[in-house]
Image 1 (cartoon, rainbow, N blue to C red):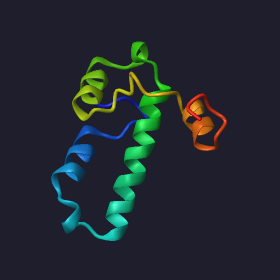
Image 2: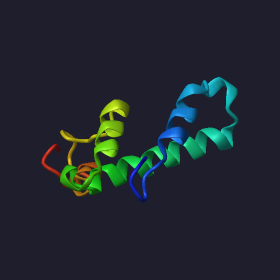
Image 3: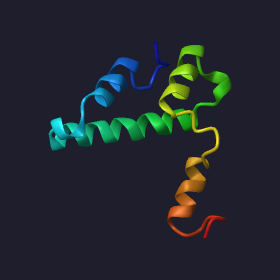
Length: 85
């Protein structure tokens, strides 16, 4: 079971099993937004506060964000104010 505020595992698996070529534009856009929202929630939630099933689900989906910059650093880099510029 996924943590509160996170995309359900069944929804995530369902959208990944269906090829993009079989999805309409609205479905693709919805999948994109849900994925980005879930990734942001994963980044904001410390590993120590995630349930065991959520940690496992994040690891399996590649959504653990352990080595990614924080959202603030990503925003700074995007506008040219970060250390990567």
